[in-house]
Image (cartoon, rainbow, N blue to C red; front, side):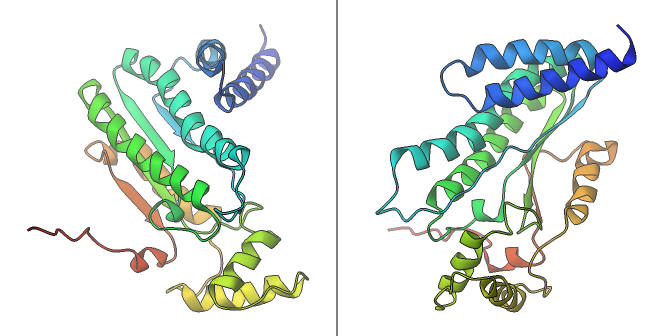
Length: 240
């Protein structure tokens, strides 16, 4: 097989893996099949990053079952399927790195975004559990916690409306909402930016994938322009 054909085959396999990871019924078998095709062309892989994510806004009192399930199926379930599929290959290679992507919304609640926050909290739990299980195989597992990244997942009308309502404002349903939301987010974020560029997150991933992070596992790394400062440092302990 020439290089061009191999590249096409790899892209097809990766797409199959993504589709399998987001389906509920036959995900396990489909992920294994897709992974076997990928492994044929990635025999030297020791680093895997998993970044599955969708989001929609639904008040709890109006949420349908499907609204909840699609978010949970894609975000934590898709990520878990990928970890379960890739981990045996990394074990066979004597170790490596697994890096998951959660979200700042996985560390606090989100108005009208219960499913998304729950899904991202779940990924942090998945990461910590995987770190405990895979550590003996010389595999580190960590999670990157991005803030609001300048992507279509963040730059849309529902997000603008959510920011406005959180600030006690009424969305106009027009292009003016974006500018007003921008002002609110700038004022709220310690570093004074409404959104973060993906390039600001990349160096953290590079570090976690490097030999310099060989003793780092089970940890979350926040890149939130300071939004993490709003989170509680530790859970209070109440004793009676």
